[in-house]
Length: 192
Image: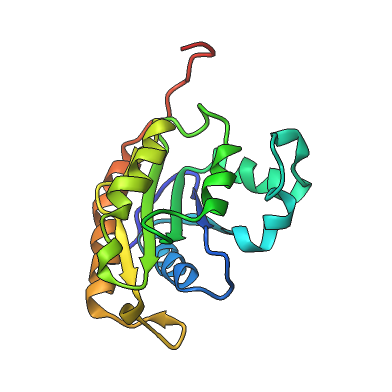
């Protein structure tokens, strides 16, 4: 069953993993597929590992490569953002944070953001709440109510293998789409 959004939703996934392929990328793809099963979307996945050389050493947006600028423009114009990062030392990757440091401060106001993360064990589950949610709170984005965390045991053969994780993805998407359907992006004042 697919909800109709006119025009199709621009759903942008950002994979903060430093490796390719990665469990984070697999989780991100599963979430994007679940959204696509329920709504008409134009999906785009941005893998930070593949564009890292275009921004890793930059200190201002003027120093970014055209490929990175295009990725930032896609994030800033997204109707829905799905972000994913592996958890290193109880936080998101430095590359993930550095990429979002270049996003225009008001570009994500009220943009729905579905938060995902992966880690070696369940010990890092709350990183979604304690690290990712505050980051997108800074942007005044609408962080969606259910985050999705996958640990190493949830994946096998390059796919999500855990029924519990698949259920969590389904719950996150099912709970999020009604909020997206009723969202109207406000006009953000030039000065706050």
